[in-house]
Amino acid sequence: MTLFATIAATMVAKIGFTEGGIAIQTVAAKMMSVCAIANGGGVPAGSVVSVLQSIGTGAGLSALSPLAVAVVVVTTVVVVVGVSYLIYEHYKK
Image 1 (tube, rainbow, N blue to C red):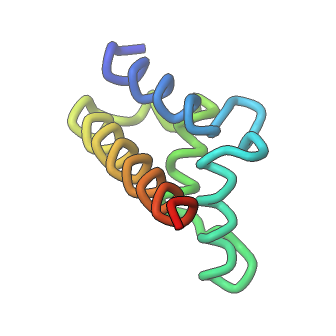
Image 2 (image 1 turned 120 degrees about the vertical axis):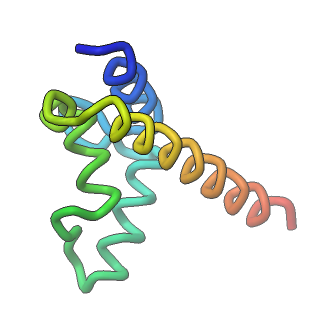
């Protein structure tokens, strides 16, 4: 596994996309919930949630180029920061 792939796998695991599935009470669980509600009860293939879950299980890393992994890492950081801000704003009131 390349350095970029290792970093991506570590990052997505930290937010809840693990080898065993999406961990409860994590950012990943909230993302999955929002995605499923927005799509009528299911998480579509190819969505950010499904791609991040594939990376979390290790299945999606071998086929990704370093550029694709970098894009996933940046996207993950943006999502985590965005969700963190929304949670902060919600509880600030």
